[in-house]
Image 1 (cartoon, one colour):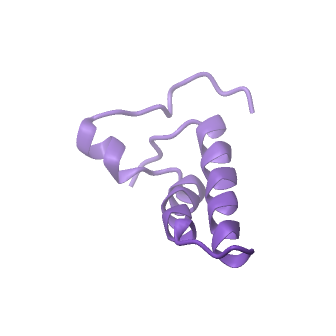
Image 2 (cartoon, helix red, strand yellow):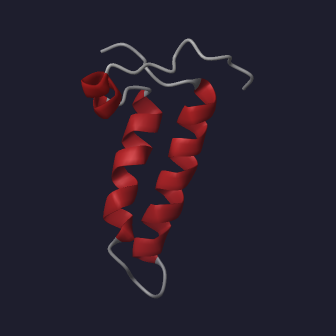
Length: 65
């Protein structure tokens, strides 16, 4: 699998994933934490399978992080 996300997008996905997962641990407990797993994993890996299906790639975008 090749990287299809820019560095900025990867950082934002990881942060959003961590915030959503923290909602499942804190009070009040919600199911949003389950949705946080996808952005966390795709941000850490740099590969988004949905982008692959749509034929998108942001890896060649300007990297300023």
